[in-house]
Amino acid sequence: MKKKLLGLMLVGLMLSVTGCGSKGDQATGGSGDGKVWKIATDTAFKPFEYKDDSGEFVGIDMDILDAIAKDQGFEYEVQVLGWDASIAACQAGQADGMIAGASITEERKESGWIFSDGYYDADQSMAVEASSTIAGFDDLDGKTVAVKTGTMSASYAEELAKQYNFTITYFEDSPTMYQAVVGGQADAVFDDTPIMASNIKDTGIAMKLVEGTGNEPAAYGFAIFNSDNQPLVDMFNKGLANIKANGTYDEIIKKYLGE
Image 1 (tube, rainbow, N blue to C red):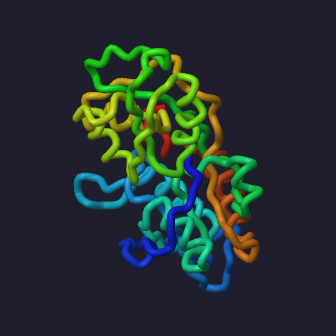
Image 2 (image 1 turned 120 degrees about the vertical axis):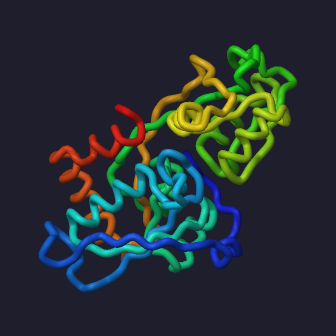
């Protein structure tokens, strides 16, 4: 899904919400030292993290993290910072790890990301305004395409831009770039397919996915940037295996995606 870092100054400006997993005698693994792990995440990446109608911060990532924490017996605090600020917080030691639909790539591993096992496979594709006649990449000649800064979908669009002669406009979050497409400021948008599909289904936004535009899927992973936090990744992996085995993982996916 996502890639680059924009700056450290965002970290101090963002809001935090708290969610805690269980400790002690409910643990099947767990740190056992009373540590509260600080986990950073994005602000709006529905259905993986977003605010519901009641204002509660929810999503696939949040439910998976909570289920793993309960299984492994550790406590955590979620910091709702945004994509770039989450990376910055982890690199600065202000957060221990991040879960934000981050695709596992060799490029990221080489630059210092340390990933868990993959917890969801997703591809990137293109969507357009519902009445658009754009039916594929060949129709993008001279057009403007919206992408989210620093994401895998942005990289995907950048790879295609010269070949299909379109201009890229960058946005900081998915909802804003979707509105640009609906409002006519952009002709198409590249983003993670399940994110666009969820928004179209749940919000009724006037967009449609363009068939045949998806790339190869990549797995999302939980990430840390400091090897001292490896125990957190180890617990995530153990807990993920357990919630997949006991059916909790499938229930979470079905809850948000109907799969």
